[in-house]
Image (cartoon, rainbow, N blue to C red; front, side, top):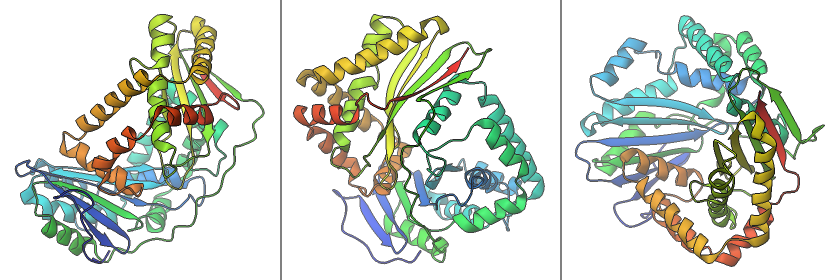
Length: 424
């Protein structure tokens, strides 16, 4: 990662962008005395085989368990005595990392972060312990109706080659059991690199000096090859309904979903996002009001969109938790509410109210360093830049009622809805 020069500010000062050949840093100076938050990510290639996503989770977990220069106790001490935190996580298309600490410790904490990303040693004992922990976690989740239904729905909507496809727990555990520490090392070599690197930095910092520190610490980190994600059509399934028996579960979870031929750079996306909030995005939404509050048929109900991404298509999804004796009535009421919403469309008052709530929630999410940094990173990963902090509310305000109802009917249609149900 080599500096290529400063770009013009992406929004009002003091938000800045600094570009590198493999990515960019987005900075915002804030009045939070002697504190900073760094959020970042880099892109990863499509899995070469079915084991790679699991191996990436192991890499992320083991990266802070020892490097070429420090063991896990020295890493923990370096963080604890500074009151700092460092974390890594993996999603289908990226590895994310975050550091929180005091401004005076910025250089030392960036050095530690880069060390964990680039130079983990993958001790065999730590590997076996972390693999056992991950297997135990999968076994525990195997009895959870929400986890099982959500994963089953992904298999109804996405082919195995798609990044959003999730195998069942038994298959994942079998793969983990045959993984070795050498597989983890190979996975790190193949996937970890400054590919599409994005860093959002907020806090009480000199942004020029901070950008120079990041460049100095990671300037020679190479990018990895990034082939295109497989183009995966809707899979052919024997039935649009999957049922998973969990006799000991205390409730039934149903997940209904439909694929969307729409990505986050599509002009309909802001209207789709608002339509989802009107449908099932919290108290006062159509589904919550009609199915839970008025009829009392569910413990909980919500709708959601798959996390948007410029290179991956997604889906909408409705989740409801019900008692076993209320399942049929709950599903019928859910479908009836959606059909009525599609037929009637939203009202102007409804749109105005939910839009105001959405903008308010977005702004409240910016009240912490963590929220600011993660929101900047979210916008950067989707090509919106640091200006996302300012432009997202503007994009929501630009959605008129006619556009919202057109998008609602085009993308929340009831044809080819697939359903997964888990529980007793």
